[in-house]
Amino acid sequence: MSDIRFTIDPVNEKPKKSTNKGRSGSKYLPILTGFLESGHELVRVDGTGKEANYLKAQLNRIIKKKGLDSVTVSVRKKQVYLEKTDI
Image (tube, rainbow, N blue to C red; front, top):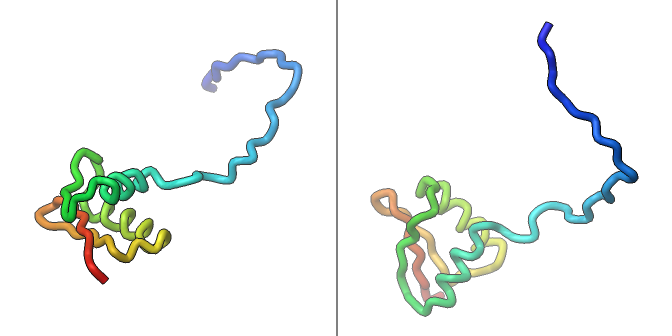
């Protein structure tokens, strides 16, 4: 039989339930916001630590949700690129 370590702490009341029903935004949205505010037509996204195709999928999901039809995400040689396109 294994022993479980634990402590019991007296409290006066329970914390109230959180009214936050999940994230208020995506952690990838700042990438798109930064790109749009940069004024550049084409950029490479580095330093996320995420696999390129996963990052592309997440960015495309946000682009579709926000209606950013003027932004295209592509992957070339395991690098993610954001490009402004004319519609």
